[in-house]
Amino acid sequence: MANIGRPKKIQIDPEQPTWICYNCGMKYGSFKVGTATWHTDTCGVCGETKTCTEPRDFGYLLLGWKEKYGRYTKEINEDSSKSS
Image (cartoon, rainbow, N blue to C red; front, top):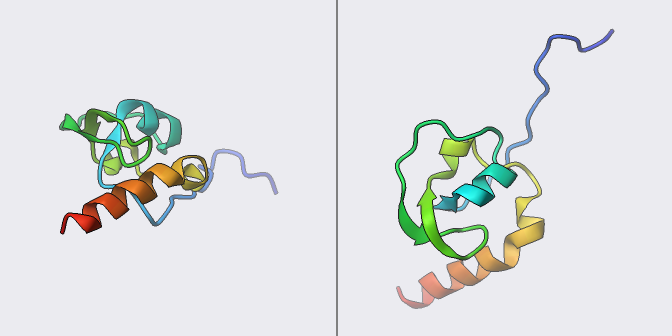
């Protein structure tokens, strides 16, 4: 039987960055951002200092985002653990 009219299941990654910039959110999020609170911070995906918000504002990131940018997230996490 066809799956007509039923929404397809979205595969959300269980590991999410703390902050995400607009460009990465649009690329890896499950939907376009609506209302969000923005501030300047380091994006947990691309590693650049930009205007960021929480991944939930993009419907959380889809599976596969870490394969492309995982090295930046790893570096950010290592740097923050050294400063603790």
